[in-house]
Structures are given as C-alpha cells and as structure tokens.
Amino acid sequence: MTTPGRKLRTGFDMDNLCTDDTMAPGCGVESPRTLEFAQTQSREVDTVGDYTMESVGTNMTEHQWNIENNWTLDNNWTQEEVNKVLGKNHHYRPAFDEQLTGTVEEHIRKQGEIRSQKKEKIVYNPTALWWKAPLNAWFHSRSLEILAVLLVYNLCVVLITAFSNICGNPDDYTLGGFCDEDWFLYNGNSLNFLGVVLFLLLAFRLNVSVNRFQESRREWEKLESACRNLTRQICYHVNIDSDKEAWERRRAVAFVASVPYVLKLNLRGETNALPDLSNTLVQQDILNIMKARSMPQFCVDNVNFYLMTAVRETRMTDARLAATETSGMAPLVEAMTALQKINSVPSPVSYTFQLRFFILFWLVLYPLHLVVYHGLFTIFLAFFIDYIILGLESMAIDFDAPFGYDKNALDLDGLCDELQRELEEILVRIEHESRELIFNTWEVTRKNEEMIYRATPSELEMLTSPSKKKTGKQGRAQFVRNATRGMYKDDNASRTDVSANSILSEV
Image 1 (tube, rainbow, N blue to C red):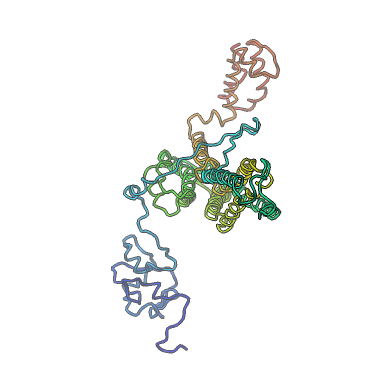
Image 2 (cartoon, one colour; image 1 turned 45 degrees about the horizontal axis):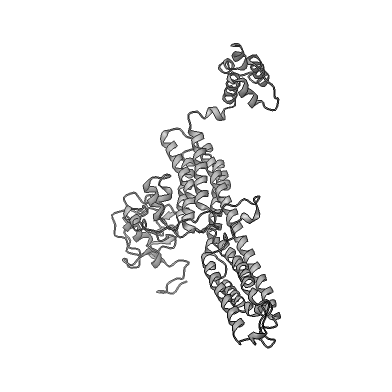
C-alpha cells in the first residue's frame, strides 16, 4: 500500500525524462501526430507497456494514446515534437548539434588556420663515417640559446676568478688552476655526487621519452596495418553489381585513407582538413568531417555505416562482417585511441620543471669548481659538459613530441601520403579493366609465353641469367615448351589456342 499524495521513488524521474524547459510536468503533448508503442497493452488497466495512464498524466486523450494500433513514430513528426516526447535532456538521448552537415561559412572560420612548416628531415646513414652525423641534429632551438648563454657565463667565471681577488690572490694562479683552498667549492665532492644523480635522472627521462616515441611509431604502424586490412576487406569481400555500388566502395576506401590524415590533424591540434583531403573526398564530405567533434571517429563511422549497409543489402555476409570488425575496424579504433592517449598524456610537468631547475643549478655551480683545477681550460671543458647535458635534455624534448613539426618528429605527412597511394593502388587493381592480366593464373602464364617467345637473345639471356646460355629462336621455343609442359591440361579450348604448342607451331 502506498500513501496517497506521496510520489513513488523509481529508477527514473519521469518529469525530467518526459519534459523540457518549454513543457510542464505530465508529458502532455498537444499534437495531431500519433504515438505508437510496441509494448504489451491492456485496456482493462489502461496501461501502455510498464507505465500506467495515471503515472504519465491523466490529461492524456485517447487520440494521443491510440492503443488500438501497434505503430511507431511516423515520418511526419517534427524535431520539436520529438523533443517534447523524449525531452532534450533525455538520459538516453545525447545532446548534439541538430545540424550535422558542415557548411562553407564554418570552413571560412577555419581556413585561416596557420600551420607550422615541417623542418627539414634529418637523413643520416648509419653505415657512413660517423663524423658525418649532424652534430646539432638533436638540439632544440631553445637549448641552443641556453648553450650560448652558458658559454658567456663560463667565460665570465674564468675572467672574474682569474683577475680578481674573489677566490684568492691572482699572483699565485697558474694557467692550469685558480683559487685558494679557502674557496667554498675547492672540494667538489658534493658537486660530483650531484652530477651522478643528475645523469641518472636524465637517463630515466630519456628512457621514458624514447619508449614514448617507439610506442608512437608502433601504434602508427598498427594504424597503417588496420587501414590496409580494412581496404582489402572492402575491395575483395563486398559484392559490386552496379556503378552506384562501385562509387560507394570508392567513397568508403577514401574515408579509410582519410583516417590517418584527420588523425594527424587531431594530434597536432589542427582542424582545417581541406588541404589534406581535397584530392581524396568531395568538398561536402570534408566539411562534414570538419563539423564533427572527433574527425577520425567520423571517418570510421562512415566506413562502418557502409559495411552495415552492404550486409543489409546482402552484398556482404555476416561472417565476413565479423572478420572485418576483428581485423580492420577494431584495430583501427584501438590504434587511434592509443595515439591520442600518447598525445594527451605528456610527461609529468612537475618532473620536467624540477629536472630543468636541477640542470641549470648544477651547470651554474660546476664551472666555479672547475676553475680550481683547470684554470683557463674551464671554458672548453664546461662548454663540453653543457653540450652533453643540454643535448640529452633536447633529445628527451623531441621524443616527448613525436607528432609535431620538429625535424626529429615522425614524418606524418610522408607516412599519410604513402599510405594513401597504397590504398588507392589496391582499389585501382581491383577495378581496372585489365585486372585479369595480373590476377588470373592463365592470363599471366599466356603473357609470360608471349614475352619469352618474342624476346631477343640478349633479353632472354638477361631473363635466364643463372643458366648463362645463349639460345636462338628454336631454343627459345624449346624453353617455352619445357616451362609450360602439362600446364594447360584439362583447360578449355580457348586457352589451349594460346598454349605453348600453338605458339611453337609458328616456329
């Protein structure tokens, strides 16, 4: 028994589920449309599914709850009326922009996006002489600035300690050493210990950064592999019976090829996809991609929709769809997620800042100790130490950002272009009119016979270079006979006509 007037606690707040800001509680819908439900209905208790007429509002009319028919929302419902029924804030209705298609006006706001230019790629052959390696290849521009400042600082330290009484009597100094034993950094054991700790911290940071860079490369390879598998599945396992279906397949492959491009833009924080996709998709598709919040996911959704449509039209089997999901779609989404995770989770900022402070602190103090034992040579020795430490830090910085425009970053532009050419080549091979010449065993064999028969002695010698035998026309015919012996047995008459025997009959 329930207390009159007391609202029952349920799993859903019906007022919030059924209303919006423009509608009072009670789900009263004043509309000429009809609502239809497929749930079990009963006239005796006036129920619709699990909800009674009392629970959803007593002002409902029989026209509004036409329970005599089993029907669904018809196509004449407007978006406003659907919102009144479900509510704009419905728990199972995610909020999104009603306008899904992109427009030119929206692109105009993005076309002024300034892209950084990819720095010249470093090309180094490990088998070449080692001193040909670009010594400043791993140096960041900011590190070069700090290195120049430290060089000036080291020069000032040497000059001040050599010509002033700050650390002793200059008359007692030699070129190989300055300062007296009273100098507070005369004994550098503490600095040496801190130096060992510093190098361990740098090694740890560099190891983390290198692992991050290698993981990025591995995940990008997985992305490329998934794109190749998905394109292969689309091209070879979806039946094509008309020009319209062939065009749909080309568009699906184009969306697969677009995934690396838009993912590259996503990783770099860019949104203008028109320069990259103008030769791959039509302009409206590109604008729709740019309209989406997640551009890579939009491309994946289009490919998935194409596959589901092919299954519904019986142009692809359910078993093949499952295989495509396993070998193509799932790895593609996993690689996308992994790359976005790497890009969005950098090294801890506190660790980086603390390490940089430690580096500068140690590099500022250590020359004050080197002048005690090395004098004027401190300038060169301190510069060498600064170069090594800042070089390690610069390498860690570059490895931390594998998707940027730095010359040590991954060449994403080149990788995307190469993958697009490979995917287009797969599509061209399956759609080309002469595809039988490369896929059909008998056609390839026939072309091979014709090539060998018409080859000159020099060309044949090149083709049969292991034998090193010079043969004439009769010898070439015998070569064809031996190479194709028994190959056309049980074949049809049309192929027998182009067999080795028919060619040899001309000799």
